[in-house]
Length: 201
Image: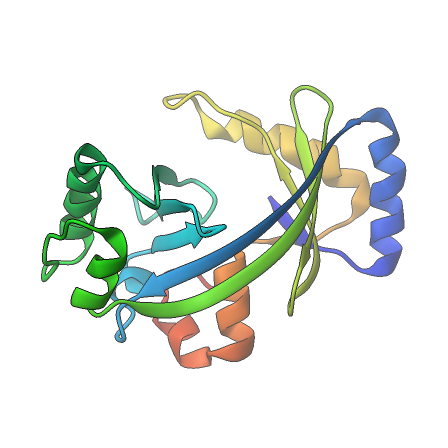
């Protein structure tokens, strides 16, 4: 669950943090890639390189589900031959014209993938053991509250959603049902935003 934070709301969140343990600050720099016609975005597939070290695919098996319910696959940027087979298989699944490659960076170029968005995020994280609360400071977008809990792969997510709703109920926040990529595109590239599967309203 993600919510935009105003300065007044940020103070309320800080009060709520008093019962939680601070787990640290993480700085993530993500570069998202797509084809010039946004083939991945249209399928709700997000391909990023995180901190110039990790390749991450985020996708939704069931496109009728909401944005936050995704599958993730991660690989080192300098992937082993075994990982490259998996990476090529994922790309072939999402891009019918994918040309298999032996290096990720080569694959971007040979298959015409371009940088779509850069997201620079400094995240403060807190937990009470079952809920993880993060305050994100996203360059060019603002401050956001993200509240998460872990679910078993096959468990009912409605219970987890209810726990999260109860946790933030007294904050009077509006749930943003898209990610930072969509927020950035909405603000900076409306045409790409409209091509995506997830929208603000």
